[in-house]
Length: 61
Image 1 (tube, rainbow, N blue to C red):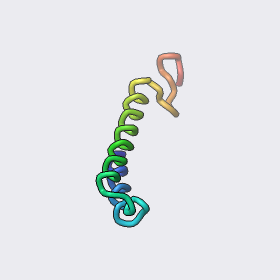
Image 2: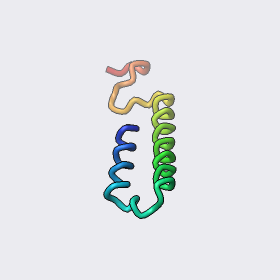
Image 3: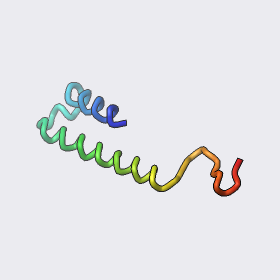
């Protein structure tokens, strides 16, 4: 996922609207998005929420 964020940031610098703002602003925005996604992933992993998988602790299949 972090690779995808980096790839999109690079693509945005080259082709997108990110090219109209200074590079440090683009990098800062990319870092904020990366941190946000990383925190979300950690929170989901720690919550024990396993979407699409039966819960064996409650007698699931």
